[in-house]
Length: 184
Image (cartoon, rainbow, N blue to C red; front, side, top):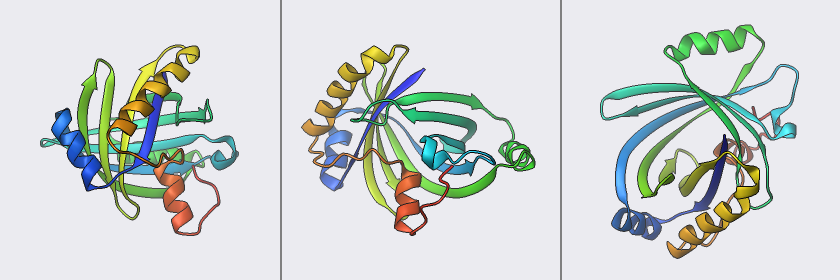
């Protein structure tokens, strides 16, 4: 499955436009721990491996996620493989025992909104780097990506987003902290 995603910098005005124009799905609290590969530099291959713990409405979910390299120059679109995990601590222990190491854990508050069939907007407040808006959908076929990217960018532009960002939150945090090494 290919995740087609566009991210932009946001301010209170963009947040309010999303809240006014789209239906809230839920508010979530994310704890994302990223890992580096023991034999491959994910920052060079543009890949990522993380365990996400997601809390919402008194519920708890965790996922192990692999994100492949970005597949175009205008978005964050990439292959994404995600599987639920019942015990994130044990999964982290398995990764460490296999030689993976933790790069960084980031915390964010996310509000998810329904846009249209298969399209979701997220308002993100990421500890240490600020407010962002992400819009995403999925496709099975890479040739559909440019059309979907164009539509998603148009939605964000209509909401007042002026600056788009292809770097991940992990990359932004590592750059802010002056660490440009393995990004997991």
